[in-house]
Image (cartoon, rainbow, N blue to C red):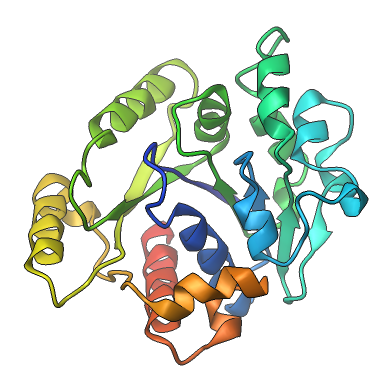
Length: 257
């Protein structure tokens, strides 16, 4: 069985995109699924959030070299300290690589072709995409079976979402007809504020059944975990954030079944 590939994206930054990717992978791995997290965001937050130094030259090969075609995907994959959980790391250099591949052939399918070489080694491959509609994002959509959209329950939450969905439709039409919206997960939810409740209602109105039942709360532990280089489940498994991502992961697996 080859892996299910899910890209996590929202063109707005700071919506809990990387947190969602890192923690979804953690709980999939805990559920005995062989899981690979592809850090495809030049900010490299997923890489540092798993305890790797994205500014360190000793990191070896990264997604930059993979996308430029100088190494194969399997050469850049690192084992994390968690069982069943691998990482294809990135560094800020990926931003320059994006400019370089603009002039290359197959510029839109480079990630898909790279991922296909390791697809049989995993049950799930999760791609953390940059918060922009860039060539990297399009590569991610073309490489994926599903798109997962984290939306924060704050003002302007749905701003830009329509544009992202338009891009998704375009990708489906031109390059990847099997791409599906897996769903929308509400992040940074604060049940004490009426704003959070209003925005969640808005998300549900817009996305209906595609909205995940689990909401991800604002949680100090979730915010602290990356600075310790671990997912929240390893940092404080009894925290609200950990419980939410555990429930959310279960929902993801059920949807894909």
